[in-house]
Length: 102
Image (cartoon, rainbow, N blue to C red; front, side, top):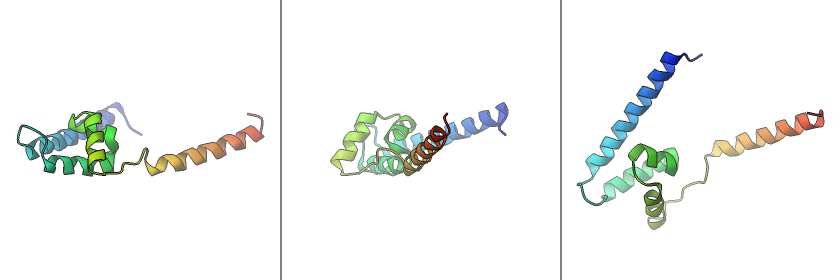
């Protein structure tokens, strides 16, 4: 079970990793427009974290990332695969309890 200290430590480590990713993203650039390397790095992150997560991590507008994806034909799923599995299990659970009058 997580205690308050453990949670704080985990959050700190996640924030530290995100800061490193953000610094690497900035390092790939030249201070002006976004470079091709920065966009490729963002696309890798989008595949892993999604558009919203990547926008938060890199401090780049979500709309900018979506525009890049459209322009470079990068397909991003609307939600992760596990969401569909979770929704199916939830539906079955609701049916189960509905049959029992709950």
